[in-house]
Amino acid sequence: MSTVDYAKIGLKVGLEIHQQLDVGSKLFCNCPPELFKEETSETTFLRRLRPTQSELGQVDPSVFFESQKGVKILYEAPSSCTCLVDMDEEPPHLMNQEALKVVLTAALMMNMQPVDEVHVMRKIIIDGSSTTGFQRTSIIALNGWIKVGEKTIPMQAVSLEEDAARKTGVEDEGRIIRYRIDRLGIPLIEVTTAPVMYSPLEAQHVALAIGKILRDTGKVMRGLGVIRQDLNVSIINGTLVEIKGVQALELISTVIEYEVQRQLGLLSVKEELCRRGVTIEALKEDFVEITDIFRESRAKVIRKAIDKNQRVLAVKLLGFAGLLGKELMPNFRVGSEFSDRAKFWGRVGGIFHTDEMPNYGITPEEVIAVRKAVNAMENDGVVFVADSVENTRDALKAVVTRAKELLIGVPAETRTAKDDGTTRYMRPRPGASRMYPETDIPVQAITEEIIKKVLTDMPEPAEKKLLRIVEQYLLNEKLAKQILDSEWTKLFEETVKDTDVAASTVAAFLTETLKALKRDGIAVEKVNEPQIKALFTAVGSGVLTKEALADVFSWLTKNEDKTVQDAITALGLKMLTEKDLEHIIDRIINMNKATIENNGKGALGILMGVVMKEVRGKANPELVNKILKQKL
Image 1 (cartoon, rainbow, N blue to C red):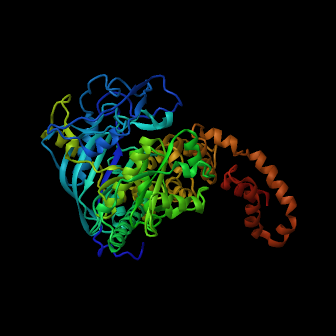
Image 2 (cartoon, helix red, strand yellow):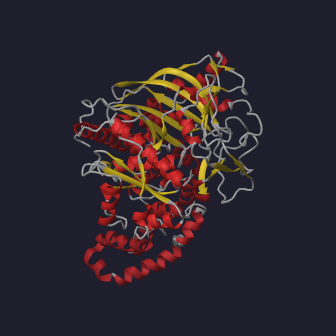
Image 3 (cartoon, one colour):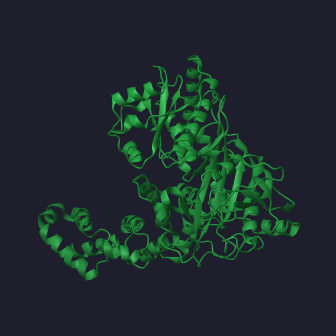
């Protein structure tokens, strides 16, 4: 992707940054904003959500799409962090005022203009992630800017909204989806930028700058799942595609690069189809049953469907031979685009197409028979599906629709980001019929008194904070910048204040060591702030050495419900007493008398290395050095 001229293709990117707020309760009730960690909840209830029309009698396309899945939602409602408001059995309470002030603080830090009145709106969502069938959201400020390097980035809006429930599983062959509503209602700040980023790396830098501003409020949560970046990506001759759920900042540039690659690939497919003379009218929903071809097949998936008395249907795609297998992103092809649509609209497990045949136990003879059954010529592609008659027909209809879209170009849609930076189809883009006023919550004025109070409590300016960190904690400027650019500034200051560990040790661990562990594949987000503070408390009290911090931290990522003391015990890192150390050092001195005689004072460094190799993580190096000097 480094060879792509992003200016030439007209890349534009806009950001929507969402982050949970660290305030005392949820947005519209008094429940604590925390996740339930037990496996099962004592309360569950079953619902099915249906689409509603707007005031103009319209149904939003994304809402209609979700309604076609025909699923039921089984909600889990743990009593420790949910209530009747979360279950939609009680009207919402008044808006959390602390959350409102945090969002106003962030807005003013981004030079935005607060609105005069806060109107809560309902945004229709019927995928099950909200018990009400909508998400409550409200615009708090508009029209601001931030500086990123030498460029001014316009901030379009900042909003306060409630987080969604979290999906915990699927049952009954996808007919029932389980959601836990502990996360539902946790306050979220949403920051929306103008689409003025013109390269993947620039978008990533802007997201990093916004994240730093949010962290500087001192009122945002950290950890897995508390921050999410949505991207709006477009290129010349393409279209606006919304990509939701990029959780890692460092993944933003990769996601954009892959989306550009996908859109360019789709445009090249369009050109090739036009060159071959394929038209939208030529792509027809002529489905042919080919079940008999596979009755004795070795293809396990197809035979399993036939054994359940299901059917195999196929459709010819005129002029598509060789294009279905074209790669658009790593491990994602044109056929994957068709498969995603078939899965959602047809409720099937996937599709087969002739560009990937013979494969999956399907023989060359069976492929020839399939092509003959649908009257496919050499230049034609064939897609076939095995499932119930209703599902196969719906799936192939979705395939034909997606094939027709290829002749138009890039479809406007919402996609979801994966951990490898690729994206998959999620739903159609929402329309204008998705929002309507919330009637259960009164309008709230943002008065001069509220603004004055927020301005009085504004966080320390970044430049002033850097100078203070350097002077107060005696850090060099590089390390001070690293801690300020990280998500750990607040924890760093609290830890240094509450433990006897040197500020440089805490800062270096929270920045350099954690980055190194993350590069090595350690899931650093699985260790929470109380556990990290407990680590440094153990070091400060002499229970643990600073050299063992990384080992204990890594162990905790794999044992989330355990304590620092559990880790010390499991890793055999119990600190050696001074007497134990003397015995070990005496033994090593006796074993290395020749080294001592030959090197004199120079033997100290040699023996120090030998002793530390044996006692590393279980003894303080300063104490080892002291005893060695005495013994020598």
